[in-house]
Length: 120
View 1: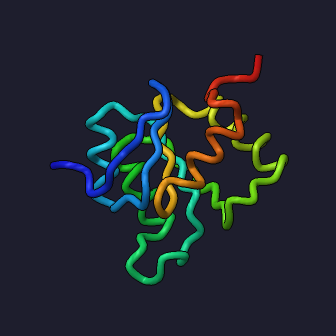
View 2: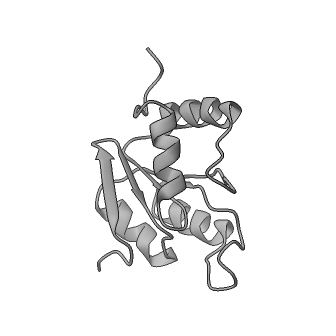
């Protein structure tokens, strides 16, 4: 089985992509990912968008850590950056972060200085 979405590996520990399907979760697990961060608010894409609870259930079934960290716009606050950096440091690596098209997930990665470990 292949992914339903194109991915962009930003570093060995972090990959971003657009909206994933429930079936994609098992593919990510087989590819060696250990965590998923969902940056998309529930319902943003209408009724065809899987809910956070559906993705979380698939992640747990596949043995992956899962966090719902919704960001409604590209206007990322300093508080979100601080929380995201701690989240990325604490989750098992490698991580895949997703949103509608990958833009917010990428912006968050850039905002934490392109690092998913603890700040130096």
